[in-house]
Amino acid sequence: MAVFTRGFSGRRTERDPRLPPGQYDAGSEWPVLNAEATPRLDTATWNFRIEGLVRTPTSWTWDEIHELAPSSYEGDIHCVTTWSKFDMTFSGVSVDTLLEAAEPLPQASHVLAFSHTGYTTNLPLPDLTGGKAWIAFEVDGHPLPVEHGGPARLLVPHLYFWKSAKWVAGLRLLDHDEQGFWERGGYHDRGDPWLEQRYQGD
Amino acid sequence: MGELTGRLDPLTAMASPGAAMAVGPWQLARVVAVRDETPSAKSFRLLLPEPVAFLPGQHFVLRLSAPDGYRAQRSYSVASPPSELPEIELTVERLENGEVSSFLHEQVVPGDELEVRGPIGGYFTWDGSTSALLVGGGSGVVPLMSMVRHARRSGIAERVRLIVSVRSPAELYYASEMEGPGTAVCYTRVAPPGSRRPPGRLAAGDLAPFLLPEATLYICGSSGFADAATDLALELGVPAEMIRIERFGPTG
Image 1: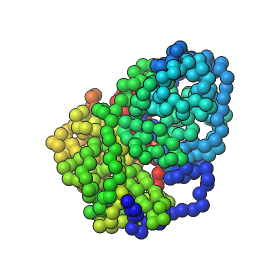
Image 2: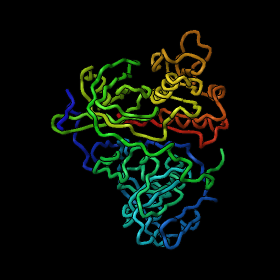
Image 3: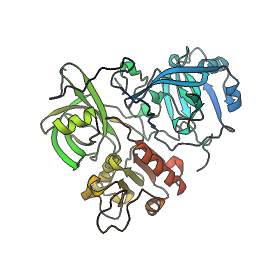
Image 4: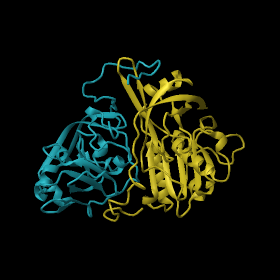
């Protein structure tokens, strides 16, 4: 169906090639978007766990996870509300390192990430492996601020940022896709910004 | 507020009410009315080819397409209540440099056709079965108005209370509906003549008289407003798990 909107030509300027379709450069802004009250988590009692279809369900305290090999991401992030932010640096631990300890079972195909607030989001397991995902504690050399998910958030920067669960508490490995918080409300199960997978069916 | 670490069941605390809602396909809606709400906000009444069931608080995506294939899409909250008519009303605030909102404000007239898709969102919704305190800042009142209108239409107006924070009377959306014991308007910069409350930001004293022990608190507005209102509610003893927040980010 070749639908076009009467009178609309769009306001296009030369686009930065780093911007996925429909996104704009937020510059120095880092908008905050969460649907629940911002929690105050104490690193003395914080923990992170991997459970579900793994050979060795494993949990880490704040100190324990900091003893693992550090890993960083330098690059861009993209929020489904249309802002993107370039040249961020996040530091933490690669999800690969954590999965190595927990040993996913062969039938594990998907992950439900869950937060200390009860927030959830679903991802295909291959989107969390191969150096594409982190548990991040720092951004641009500083501890991750609480409004951006501190003390620790999931970081999956090649997908829309709602997949990067703030205040992450753990990953549950599953043999099927189980929709999370936004996904049950109509958002996409994968969320690739370059394919503009914002909503179900996109 | 208490520490949340490990005290909530992560998989149920934020579970959406009910099952997942299906997002419908793109529909070509006809604009049947355009109304000024404030100097910077207009409501667009859209006639859909197919009726779409939605809950108060949900939003629709609106897509503009240029002849060469360029598209821009934004999501807008529904202001109208669910009804048997295949119609929805979206209230759109005109944002500075907003590509979509400026087009809607400047170009769109009744008779035009617009592509929409929805409903979207399953958490910031109210189905009428519980009591609710709604707190909106500026344009954040839009999804809350769908809840209020739904309550009034359904004869359950007493389940809903609404507090709106706006800078001045000229910026108040749906002013004619902001009357009665269940509503309050807090003016932050300019209060109307004869107002008992001096202009000022939303304070605990504004919120406290409206609290009900069993009510879910729905907060909608800018990120700064949402944070401030959430902090007030937590100070007043509202449990964090009773608070639902919708932040209107910079979208254009």
